[in-house]
Length: 472
Image 1 (cartoon, rainbow, N blue to C red):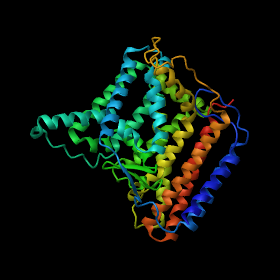
Image 2: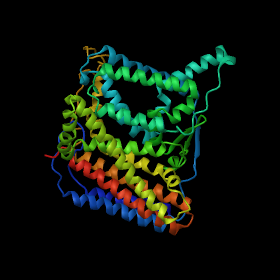
Image 3: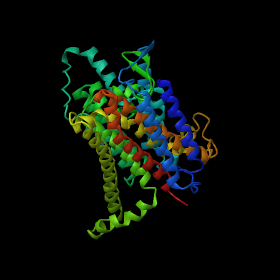
Image 4: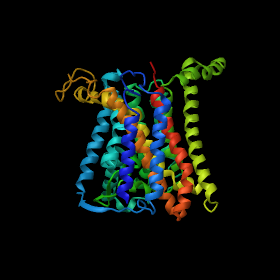
């Protein structure tokens, strides 16, 4: 029965790919062409895929299938792997920081901006989805803290104080704020591509992480307050791989995210993940370009500089878009709450928060795939000449970016495919959780009418952002 559901979902995805065909490029280094079909047509096509998937789930998915781990033990991972990967992570972090501080301050010729904005922020999303929580292995500040703790434990074990109890009310709020702050730097901060400033910001972030881990414990702080660790871990939970207590397991895809421990700030985190990417796409379109002068004008009248007015206006726009995403999700929760008053709206929002993770992944891939496909190639020559001083450490300094590695049509298929698959996965997770919350299949299905509307809204928004950015 589960196989039939997955086949229907896959078939719907293929139909969507056929309906939503050829060229469009949403984000990256290459220009766009006009969409070959009207916007309303591909919007309705994607909506129909979700509706078909919803009906298939209601008919064929009658009991929860993803709420348990369903893990199968594969192999014990050597403890030395953590040490080796941790040392490599520290080394890579040091190389990026040194490049930013000592190298050329031309962003395209320095290693730091490309590694931070492309390899890490975009590339690790895809790696996490397919390979699991890779960032946890290479996390440089976590590795540093573990190394210091190991040495301190050998030198003076009796003098080590017990970590403070991490406040439950704080939860994942620091990670949510961290995600928004990083995107603010990436999109709004005037010196966002200045290598030396990026290096200093990286050092400052690492220092805050080390301080937090020293007070509240390495694992607790990392799983709650480290924005990058929490961000990539959420995506990794969608993968079929899990590493726990030194053992590698194979699990059902998507089942890992259902095990997400409830905590304050989780809803804010996943909303921020979607909202920040949505804002990035929105700023590429004509509506934002028309709206921005109206936002800047009152600030300029107050005597603010043009740069300051632009930052404030963009910051307001970022927060408003994140807020609108939150309202869309809350509307779906309110609809579910109307099915049965026995479940509070706040509890439902927390219980279904994990269903937004595939949407966040879909938005990230759809919006940034072209950037990774093209600018990611720059890593080949930047690692050989990280300072931009003419070095050729690995013999690849003369490499160039091949803009024909994937055509615009291929990018479009990846973008649309990611959006549709991500939203179908979100529907599956929501339906599976609803069967647990409401027990009766009929009530669970009724509750998901509202989430279907939310998914259709998110899908249509994502496709509209792809079509609206930089039209010719």
